[in-house]
Length: 171
Image (tube, rainbow, N blue to C red):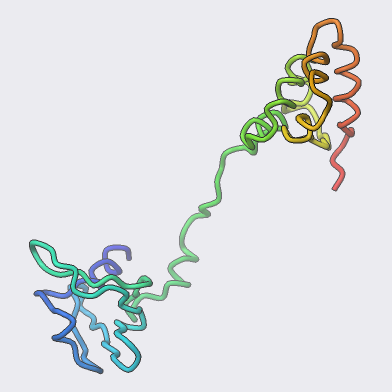
């Protein structure tokens, strides 16, 4: 089907925009014809030509705003035959999600310092986390986070971090 759709976008020979006429039926390399509509700008089988006549060494390109599909292809029916394209990768766990978001670097560092990364990693859980962003940590008094990250303050850090975690998934 992809081959047919792509060939439906190609005419044999160099057809410039000045060669087009309203209602013109132009045969494509796929075998079916596209229809030219000049009533409101230039359209090819319903697709708006946004930039005509882009020269190339071996022809011309007309830039259109959508994919045109040959009338003989039922896209909906074809799509039903396709396997699911949903991602098959497992979702990220809580620490991985925090790292990937890029706005929880202080929280991730604190989880590491309090040795809580493993506890919040899959397969453990489910958990509900109220995750302060880096901006939230930056709003604390200067030096407080650094103080909490010291080994001798791990108990206080542990208690503060666990205060942000509920056992179970709460929505």
